[in-house]
Length: 453
Image (tube, rainbow, N blue to C red; front, side):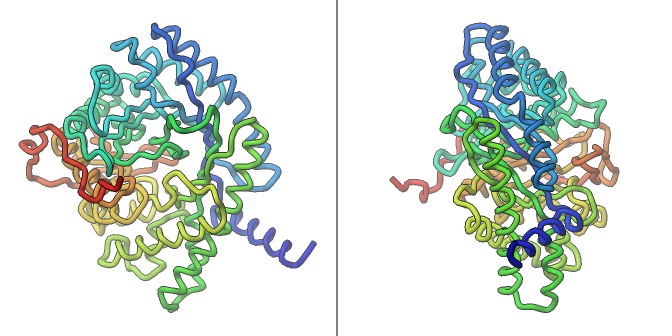
């Protein structure tokens, strides 16, 4: 064994043991288009059977690979064809499918199943509207099902009727899951420019351009990047960027190895490695702390957006060098309740919704896992969605909103979701209304630079 090989092995061991490196998720995408039938019951049965057959060994294989390579694989998941495409023949009975999907997830032992989704960026059919209206009940009666709705894109503009509807749906979901502090909303995300190969929840779905079964892997290493930057004290920014790139390269290489092996063992195509930095509430696994290591006294300080921009860019450059199959979201996540550094910044009011919105312009997603007061109006939530979609549409990037209007909670109070979902203070929204704007409906046209054909 060469000295270089030994060094690589030791570095990987250190990343796992001391720096919280892990493969955050192995996600199998499964096409369910072949399962469409006229009745809800028959479609649900066929979907259940196909998921259980295709993904029956995903947990076993992930555990075997984790043991073989010494790299923790935290989550095992499945994503499916956007479910609204499966339910057109039985409007009003969509929750029959939702329950079958949840039962399948429990049967094979995965953490989450994503794809209870609709793509309505340009317009909404009657069956898609019925599907979207089923989301609150679907998330109430299931445990592992995740839902998403794409309401805008750089090519089609923003469907403001769908934006208005999703503000109302989020409110209803919070009320339906009131006994769990509106937890259903943590499994519901609203997108602009949603991608078809995202392995991360709650926004994963299996795009129609994908193969029959595909393995997508999401790697995560905020702690590894944070640790690497400790050697850069006082160094100029270009050295900071180079350090992040080199670290992202190592992380992505490990993820690609796991993805290829998992694909072989599960008889599926190797899709992509999503190299997003996804934090957890555990100390030492925080994106916010990376930004503070670069030179901020607290995330939220002036300069935060610039630090996040350089971090995101360096992660992408390092990852692309390591794998020809980089995809998904691939960048940096800034969920408030899931990042101990973000939680602390929100507690001391160093960060606000306005600053999070600004950070969205340069990160992977957007307003993510933000708890707001339960009495926040549906139109205000729609306004938050519209702002995020505008950033995504104009900048030709994915943006998203995952907010939780926590029933009976006010600004200054806390909500604790537990586990990887963490805890968060209730953040303040604007006191001023956008209801007249939201009620106009219609569609915000795509920007002029979208006309590239």
